[in-house]
Image (tube, rainbow, N blue to C red; front, side, top):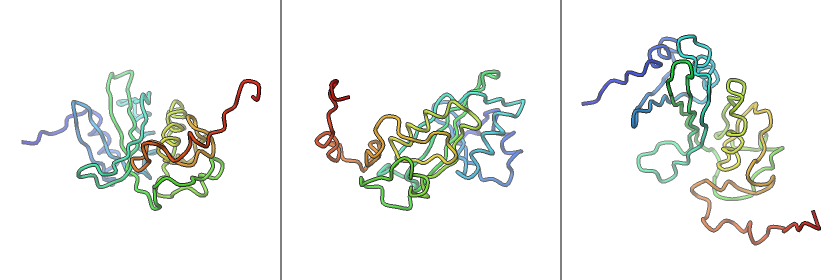
Length: 192
């Protein structure tokens, strides 16, 4: 028998957004709410500002590639781990994204062109206006999976270099890479 979710943040969310289709689930006592990508700012702002909820800390932000995952209906997701430090509660938000272009390794746009040339299906609003600590986490998710965060204050790669060419944590990225090690220019101490 399915049990009813009783997380204290769900009733205020449903009351505030009755027209929005919010899906909720629970796994290992962690509640996740799936939010439409165009509503992440509105929902995040409400969760932070509502006096009864006060989700004032974004403790984690990561991306997931669901390629070949059994039963998956979407390709990518962004997970937001929220903490209410005043109420000692945790809540996860999830936004699903589906690419409109081929995701196989190829030459990706450079950082300065990613907003204009990037895949529109992989664009979601940045939550740095709500939780400033999201800045580096969004940059890492962009660098590793190619998810583009609109209105980010400094969206550029953080682990690889500008012009790297692809996104290494995508499931269709080859395990041996696409020639980065073989073509990498070694900079010596004297040449730096």
